[in-house]
Every structure is written in structure tokens, then in C-alpha cells.
Image: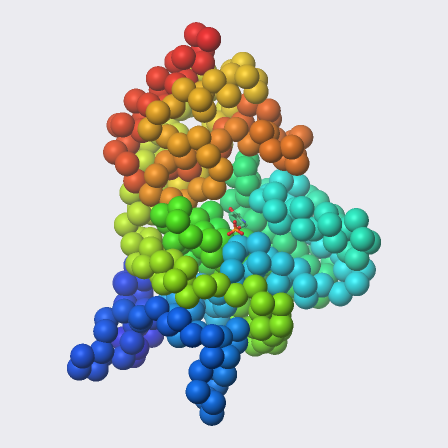
Length: 360
Ligand SMILES: *Cc1c(COP(=O)(O)O)cnc(C)c1O
């Protein structure tokens, strides 16, 4: 424990050393999965909905990386729901024009019952974002944001939010704390869909909040206790096991993403390439509109045509196949999540599918 808490260690090392049982003779290296609905009385945990040693191991690692106190939730949406539950009646929420649909749908539902006011802005326009924070209660950022990969200036938005007395929240799912640490840039709360890059193997759903504001942390923890959106211990164990290799997975997938982005830019079937310059996600707009894009996602063999992202396997999907996706997203936009396969195999498969789309 003492080693993993040393601030001199690189995040790549902390991913490996954090959240371990104390190094005593015959103690296991990894926290076992604790299946327990209750605990003997007299301690702090008390009951299975209040705490679990397997959650705590995961929370230690994520908290160290983001620089705050992490709380595990049943899914990314359970984590975002906990944060949105902090909003008082009539709250004014600034949110991106396009973002993860589940979060925007949660916000719209709260809007439809008039419990909040929603101000959607282009988060890549810092002046517009700052102007929108005037009188706001919460500033919700996702950066890079689904599916156009817009990037926000977190520091500028967080300080504008602070001046306005608003809570700033950053969905850090796409960047992970290895590429971006919003709390260090002044944000109040980070949320994660650990389902994606953190767990990394497309076999578990998990979410988390991270904050260094004690009051926010205790309100979020209380929400988790009372509303019951708790993760199963096996899921958290799998996510922590996956997170140990986040550094190598991210390095490789990011290098491949940068390589593919360069090649996609010269392909005749590709009109637009969107890539924020870091990370494992990119989007393309292809010739032939929605039909052209559908031909591409159906022609790939190695890439998987599916939603979700951040796994070891490369995936892609045409985003407007979802009826509630924003009309600001081009009907031909395909979002790509680059995995860790050989980049030449990935390119060969994608180029062949794009070639077929041009000829089709
Ligand atoms: C997937 C995702 C979510 C929702 O997470 P779940 O684990 O699916 O509930 C939230 N934000 C972003 C950016 C996501 O990609």
C-alpha cells in the first residue's frame, strides 16, 4: 500500500501497484473477489450495499490516477445518474450539443418534467461555453465527446463554472486518466464508463465517479447506498484486472489510431476524418451518405460492427442508426474504436471495405 501511494510513481506503474492487499507472508497479490451481502457487526462496512473490499481495490487505483476519491457504480449511466441527482429543482445545466446519448437522454428526461433547464453548446467553442455558464448550476462536459470527438478546454470551463458557482463535471471515458486528469484542471467531478477502456475487454459494465470535494463525495456515496446502483464484486474484479493493462493497451491502440487516421485522410471514400490528436477513437464521414456508410460497416470482416468502444477488439458503427442521435451528426459518420490488433491487418480490412463502398 505504502509503495502504491508514493506520489513519485508514474501512472503506468500505479495501474500495476495500486489496490493490492498488504504485502504480508501468504497474503494474495490480488484482492480476492468478496461475495458478501453482509459483514459481522462492529466495523465500517456494515452491509453489502454500503461497501465491498473488491470495490475498494478498484476505487483505490482509479482514485490515485484521477487524483481524487473514486466510487464504483453499476454502470457509467448509474454514475452519471448519481451526479445528476445532485441537481436541485429548476437547475440550469450546460451540456454538449452532442455527447453520449444515454447521458443526453437522462438530461432530456429531467428537462421534460421541467425539473431542469438545459443549455446545449458547442463545447469546442470556449467563448460560447464560458458565456453559457452564466447562471448555471452544473456544467457537464464530455471531452473528447461522442461521436464527433469535439474537445473542450476543461480548465477554462471549470474556472468559468467556479465563478458562476456551478459544479463542473467531466466524462473522462474517452481520454482515461492516462491522457487527461480533469480534477487537476479544476473540475469538481469526473465520471467514467469503466465499461470501455478501463475494463477494456467488452465483457463487463461498470461506472465510477471521482472527486476531491469531500461534500460531493459523501453525497454521491449516500446516493449509491440509498438508490442501490451498486456493482457486483465479480464485475469490479474483472474491471480492475483489465485496468492493470490499460497503459499498454492504450499506448498501442493510440499509435494505431494515429496511423489509421493518416491513411484514412487520403482514401477517396473518406470525406472527413475527425481525430482529436490523442486517444483511440476517431470518426469518419464517407461518400454515399448513410447507404455508403452502411456498406462500409457491413463489408468489414475484422472490425466488429457494434456499438460500445474501448475494448481490445476494434469496433465501428454508423452513429445515425440510433434514432435519437443528433442531426448535427452527419448521416454517413462512422465512429471507430481502435483496438490492439496489428495495425496493418486493421488497415487492410478497412481499406477493402472503403474501396467496396466507393465502387458500390
Ligand atoms: C458508454 C458511455 C457511457 C455510459 O456508460 P455505461 O457503462 O454503458 O452505462 C457514458 N459516457 C460515455 C462517454 C460512454 O462512452
